Length: 231
Image (tube, rainbow, N blue to C red; front, side):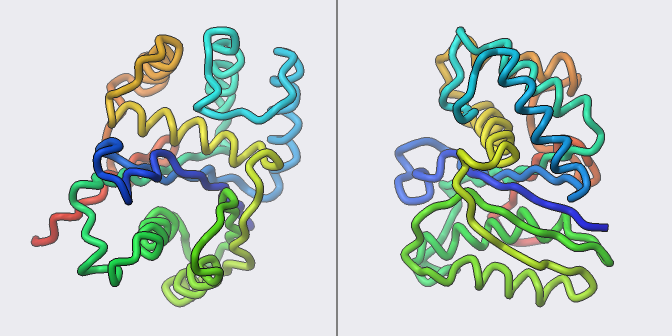
């Protein structure tokens, strides 16, 4: 089967400035390639209903657009063709000096690998799309694809490509869910609307607080990576 993965990040600045906040998150939306056009049409329909035509982002949430974002969240949770996975990184435990040649950017893409690799299964194809950013090393995406190819020999990874988030509704959904999850972990959000959306997900769909989930959780998977080492 052919799948597509659309990814974004939240709180990236904490990887280089530990005073920014405690956690960084990288998240992705998984869907079958055959569902992509239906997904795009549905998001467009929701946006037109609320007379919104720009990019959807966690950082754009305000009281005026609360119902829009709640409807997007409802659509995600009520649609079996969509899955979300995020990796949560405790930046106080990140050691790029010893494990990434003191290269923050390299360390960042190693975490991307951890997000993706564990949800790539045998005998499927995965096209991977990341939110576009300027990298110091222009080969980062090629290297990520190469490492994923080598570690998933029975799966196909036709492409690892950067896309501008304003051109991808799925990257925008990844932004919303990744930002929301990371905000819960950092516990610094003062926006009442954002807090209400976090509570809405917890009470309506999860039945508990957002936190680390079992590896087998398929709909809303939260991976709090253990960087302490040891057994």
